[in-house]
Length: 318
Figure 1: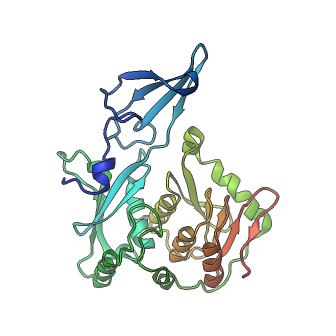
Figure 2: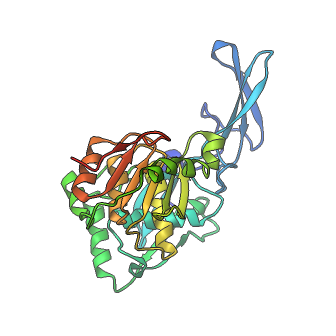
Figure 3: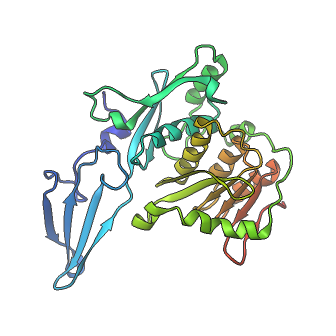
């Protein structure tokens, strides 16, 4: 495959932090600042597994103990629709390849390119055994009769709606983003105890965060607390696309009356994606932004931020 853009800079390879290359499994060390010694265990990064690819850095203080640090994996994944390169997203590959497919479909859905599974005929990883990046390349084929989806794809590419890194970056006009979302019919009401309990439910599933401290979590629940989808990723928008894409692939739509919980802050793109999926409420561990607040109010989305065991911020009012 011809390299371009971010692939040239970030294509998976066997590198250590300082930018030099060693053989797989070989260790190296050098003296660092403050009397610490850095040691590298280099691991092949072209295997789609959460824990194996990436770098493990060991910091040794001379004469002291050393500890291993497991880093969250970040690799580029290209999404091609009808053979057109639509986006390169920086995401966390996971052991189950379906997560990449969920991400691709959730991304296209929340960008307004597809409405449902009827708009596509297939989604899958590249199967070319000679392509070293095949595990980081996802193909989506639109249904031949889905003229509306094809038109939306053309518009998305032409107007730079599809971003290579985050949910809103690269969009030609914020006004266009607002036009993509229609208000929900009614404002969802949730019990206070339910709201306060959800971050703990999310946190109990974040095993990769426990290992690395470097990934966000997102989950979709019913109003009675039943889990519908869960994902983790270095990008909070990717984690959201993964859970929405899973619900789309498993035909769990519509998501009216469902609740999305995120371990991150509630930025504009998180709220916009939730509204695109017609999710009724977003509960975030972190802060909400002013644009997220404004969009939630005008769209009748129940938004709760800084949710803790004993408090939360309610953004239901202007």
